[in-house]
Length: 349
Image (cartoon, rainbow, N blue to C red; front, top):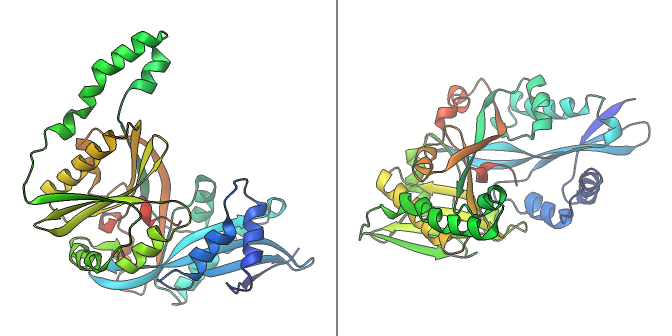
């Protein structure tokens, strides 16, 4: 059997791509709407999608896509690729198609079409990346903070009255870390719904990007695309200002009684970072949520601050793989995870 690979036309072939994804996934997401947003409106550029075809039957049997993502590296702008959708028909999965598709992106880096690449593959795909000789630069850490022990007590204590009583006694102790944060009159906080990012955020990102060697673009144009126009969920954000200027924010979503951090950026100032996290938790507590989650690359400097607020590492999430043209001057920097500022928001959508 001969397999050929063609580059898709994003507009005319979108239905083919959606059909391939739907045929291999069991969820009920509206991929027509999601892919139209992701592939056709990305401000960082047009994605590249390869379709694998069984030459004998003409049947589409797999796709691999990558989307452009702008980064600041030593305060210089670079466009790289972020690995995105991947799907192969079940009966063709033993033919090495996944490995060949992964090598397509690598070849594009090697021939100079793009400078660098990164990806957060699921556990099933990790071996494929390893076989394709992509360097792993680290793991994403899944941090969790319980906001109450009610659900835990229910599983431990048989009698409802006793479990409720114990929860009322012990829950206040979970609040202690954020209660002892001293207030600073220069700091102000604002909670916003799914409100567009404006030019004030461009000024903020221009300043904060200088604190990090490698950080993904968080300009207002990108953030409006990534979060405000995203068809997957509606976000909220808390902003901290120092003397009326933005100096940090946390973007999050709420799913029933679960709070999930989607992104966070803050200037490199311990007091401001701590104040931002503390006030965010205080706001969340009023919603009677059960817990908060946050996912960062293992070397992210924010992790130590979250652990001050009794977040614990629940698990290691996806491995992060990166690849870069060895002839470029960012080769060593790109493959060193100590240089990266990465949150769950930098993962493909």
